[in-house]
Length: 322
Image (cartoon, rainbow, N blue to C red; front, side, top):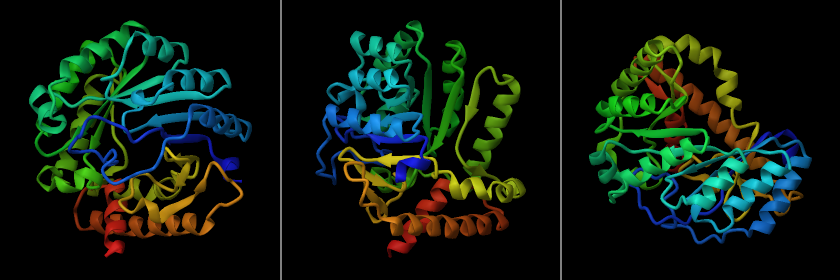
């Protein structure tokens, strides 16, 4: 059974979202007509996951706070022994949800696009004050908040704004996530960061972490400079197996090898609603894709280019679609 080796379940609980962010890799409902599973169905799925050795769920969207009963589901997951986290823009946060997040000890990752001009460019609505206020409300309630800042060519110089924001609030971890060229973001070529930008971003994070001694950690995923080639080689097993412990589940119960792929429907493994029908061939194709992407990434490093390995995987998948 697929659950037997999985520790974390990534759940796209719903594709509903009333924001049309230009950097969204899911694209909300633009090209998907799938129907959300009910809360009772999700509870049965989570119980089965826990009984098979699952330890943690991470809930995404769309905007997950728009899913009716999300607080109840988080509390249920916590009560059966699952750790919980959620990624949200906080627009729909209210006092009841704050209580649910606190009761379930949910780790909250917040999409934070600042300063204001950057927020307006990508979100199209001036709700930055709402987001900041909601972050402060959660922190006051004792909820752990972890901002995610999508880095692109036109805001990479604004990281100091984020640093000041995090330090002022004693936030422990901030993710700097390079914009990914899939979903709606695939239409925003002028914002993609270059290999030189990746080098600058890694250097900046190293300087910040040294300066603040880890009191606030600035992190990212799978970024490598040419002088990190040895680290890349030593990380091969991790990079090719990082999804082994993760079960990625869509809002309709579909299990997908990797949410971040531009052609993710080609890597459908099955459904949590019928675990007797698992497509092992899709998983094998995904592993083969990762291996080809790894070689591609090594080739770029040897050329003197910094890389984002997640983007390398996406580009490899895109090339194989043509």
